[in-house]
Length: 81
Image 1 (cartoon, one colour):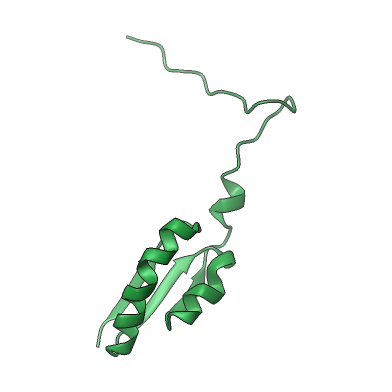
Image 2 (image 1 turned 180 degrees about the vertical axis):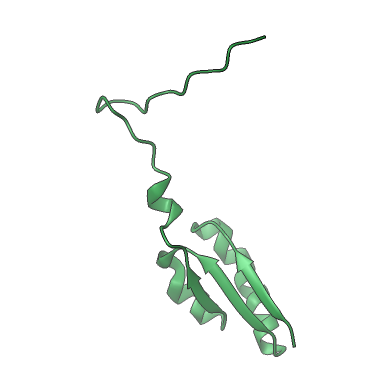
């Protein structure tokens, strides 16, 4: 059978729609791996897929940072040519 890799951002709306698909693939005898954030390890494993964790979860590493303690610092826009 085939080896299949799911990859998704670690957010429920990105994970949950694929769970029944992963379950069907596992039940059909395919090896299914799922690469996502640690927060969803149990949910992925419950589908029968093998959980493969991100080294750092985007759910924490993508948080905007501020140097002033207020709103996130805006990036400068490129100058029009």
